[in-house]
Length: 336
Image (tube, rainbow, N blue to C red; front, side, top):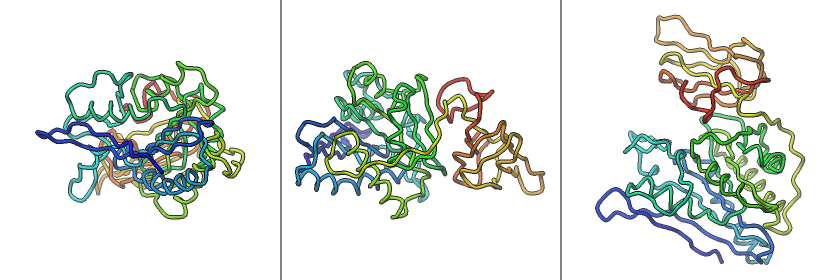
């Protein structure tokens, strides 16, 4: 039976206490220690549903004696972000009180969280992953193909993870001091030796991709991945990975030169030539459209979910065949 390892941390109000629900499944001890979480950005829903659907399968595996490793599941990681409903929309990417991205500046250690609810949340969540050899952080983009984000030192080991989720792309990164959860986990894992070490951000397509068939495929893939790494006995073998891997330097991020309405002439995943139009932006009716074009040949990976964008907003991210002239380090969506 799963152990309830839920944790609490102080909120902003007098005497307020917030809770992160977490479950831990214990196997025979012969497999790896795994940490799975979703919803660090509270408005990224598909991963939460995937982990919810994984829970009964883990319980069954534990009951039948098929569980070899220890698996911790945090299906809804961010109670701070989940409180930020405004005009019937959840604003879950940034913490309103300080305008901080929820997935930045996670602590390198958990010893001395400061008094803010944001830092207390980060330290408390990170502590749940301490000791894990495999750490998967499930996210989504706005609208996107399925892809994984992996430190280069975990490649090509992470090909199996790409195969599990049917990822079409792996983006290989190095440390950039943004302090994303994955970066904090990678710093810990890379400082220790062990055959099973792996951490990755898994981007489960777009925020609205919650249809049951897609969810079922992701749950099945995640379960089979746990089998692949030796955490579960009797899972199906993974197929070969058929995506492509590119360094983060080869990702082109196309920002909006002004606020405006957006139209996309091509679908997600489309292959484009250098100079080909990937989006159109209308600053306001009666004004000329602005054509946004591919800086180099590549493939469309993500695009803005709403069809209106603020100046400087990310409109499209795409792969390139070579390094981007605009990339200077940092996370993919840093402002130009």
